Length: 161
Image (cartoon, rainbow, N blue to C red):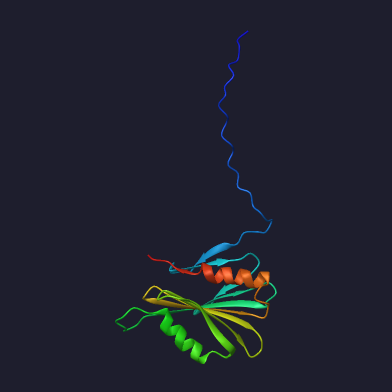
């Protein structure tokens, strides 16, 4: 009878991916031109019109609208801070308007309106294309739905071609 050799080398552990929760995974949507991407959470309503991308939460208490603008006849590159400043001057805010991020490429601000809805607005640009993303929610800012909506805003990207 042949004797089996004992090997001390251990087999490598199997690489398994474990999900920490049982929630369905959402997806990433690219516009038909392929220049904008956005994460779409599972069970959120999504539609694209000629001008906008719109997402609504399952409860319809939170919505996100993204509009795109292109530079025409302007020599210098677009600056998101400039557009946010103009936007906040006309925003129907009650109380203070808080700018949470301010760079040439991405600027974000938060405020409440007279009806108590929470707003978060972001301008994103690559110099030629300008995106305005607005989040409107009647949910509390710390609610899971508001956190998901904030993650959607953070996921918006202008894709370089």
